[in-house]
Structures are given as structure tokens and as C-alpha cells.
Length: 132
Image (tube, rainbow, N blue to C red):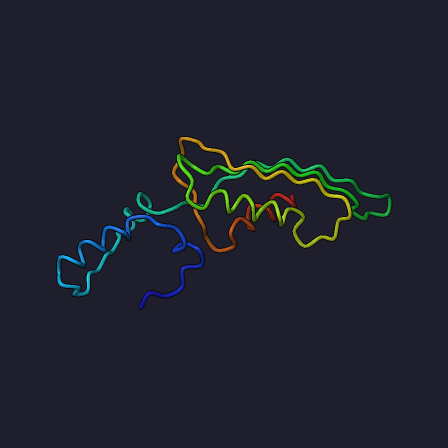
């Protein structure tokens, strides 16, 4: 049984190594199992994000404008990083109906581990920034 991945199975990591191994065993089942340490070194991490948010509010407290700039840490190369940055840009105002919005959501390369898809696909980071 494979079970749910909630995004963690969307990208390609070491799983491709199992295919040639399976071919060498006449297609008998091959099992790839990771220790907890292997999970940290061979799978994606949740991307870091730096956010700048400027909000325009009326005197009665209605949010009427927002200017967002999000910088996503995609890691040393990109797997799903740009897709997460795009999804974050689309959802940059969260659940709020704001009539005037400018949003920039940028994925940058760094020397950090590679970021990838996880449950929520960037929404946790965006909503944390919005609600601060």
C-alpha cells in the first residue's frame, strides 16, 4: 500500500533508481525504504519564504488594498519550487476579498536543500505571513 502523499510524492527524487533494480530482478517486487535520516537527506523540504506585505485599510477597518512581495527559497535547483511560488502568488490575499492587489511571488535559487511540494502547496507560508 502506498498511501497518501499530500504533494510529497509529486516530484522525482531517488525513486527512479528502483526501476532498473526491478528490471534486474525479473520484475519481482523491489522495496525502497528510507530511515528517518534518509528522509532528511533524500527528499524535499518545505520551502522557506520571505514576505513583505503592505496593506491599505479604511477608517472603518475594511482592507481595500494590498501589495505583496514573496521570495521563495527554491533550494539549489528547482523541482516544484516555481509551481509553489506561482500558487502562492495566486492565493496571495488568502481568504480576503481585496479589490486592489499587486502581488509578486518569486522563486530564487540558493545553496539550501531543494524545496518541494508538501500538503498545502505554499498556502501555510502565505497565510502565516498574511495573518501576522
